[in-house]
Length: 377
Image 1 (cartoon, one colour):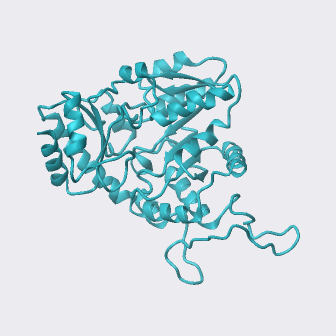
Image 2 (image 1 turned 30 degrees about the horizontal axis):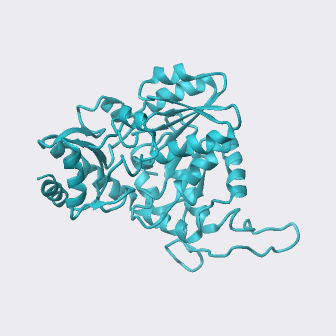
Image 3 (image 1 turned 45 degrees about the vertical axis):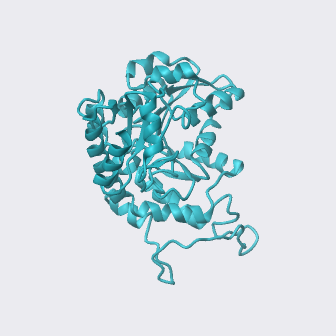
């Protein structure tokens, strides 16, 4: 079944005896048993809920995994993932991650004895060089947030399998509509479902999708016992959002390509970071493993004053954190998404006072460009 069809129809035929064509919201916290030692398959909603279960099966189908777990936030999903590791374990991570992930890794996971080796995962040899006897996993974003670096997932998977370590891919930016890491060799896929999967900036959520049943069972145990499961109503919102994922992603991608080209030609824009540009160093990798480039663009203006002016002058575009919704958003990574990343690391990655990150929405692209034009004047 094609991805766009799975988006609409989800995990299975959902029509019940009522004939309802939408997924019911099961708000029950607990479920009655037919008798001692007997169960309907549902006991307590932290363990499983029919609405959340439908969403999880949909995500597993979309990512071509054996199972999925829905969490209250993307960070809750990452927290559960880190519970797989213990004192002395090391994880190789992309050196250009979302700032919230870096903050969690360095300030919370590190307190539990887990260490992180940050490398440019776009250079596969850097991954291989960083492997130690205590390395247990590689954690990558591709494209990265916010500098849009691309990692060869199949290449990273080959190294991980050779070294007998896990490969985890944060697939938030491209979603399973444009990129499927598990068929490329990833063991675990993570999403902030708050972004493109929900698509409307109205529900927080996170996902882990597993390629291996044994890993899924371990994470399921963590999910059940730590309790950060997605609520029935938010599960419903994610099911509803995913129904339009395919058509939204097409429009995000279409708009972003046009906006990126326009920004490249603007005299006050010095650099544009977008995987779909022919000048992008990793474009051939993107073409090999992805069917689209997504809606995320970062660009560097000619001065800090220009960047600040854009944030203050945009009208249609909203100056707000997050991404992936139908509205176009612009973010200032230096003080928002990456404020807690050490200054030296920010500067090394190009996250400076001139950098802006744009999440291209689904508005008419001419209106988005008109707003950028007046803000840059």
